[in-house]
Image 1 (spheres, rainbow, N blue to C red):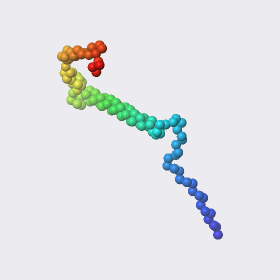
Image 2 (cartoon, rainbow, N blue to C red):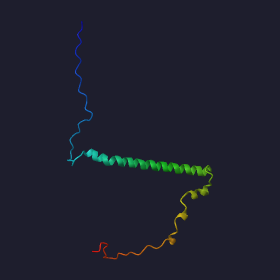
Image 3 (cartoon, helix red, strand yellow):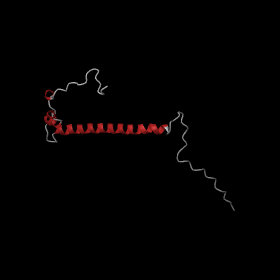
Image 4 (tube, rainbow, N blue to C red):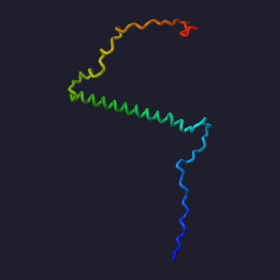
Length: 113
């Protein structure tokens, strides 16, 4: 008859968060890593959005040029300029009124001192 030995004691379960080492720099409330992440994470996300936007814009423009060149949009390559902002939307510089003269002279204070 064989007597079963008691099972070995189980090790304690690991804590979900490892204890953080003490910070080398004296922090004025809050963890330094949290402050870095507070600025780094949105910056990385914004940079990624900008890069993806630029890549998407270049892809759209390349596809547009390809479609215009092949005539799939029914336009001739010379009409491509019409798709861009019309130059008549802005008046010529000569039609703009001249800027008003400066009213604050040397030594005059806008605060009335």
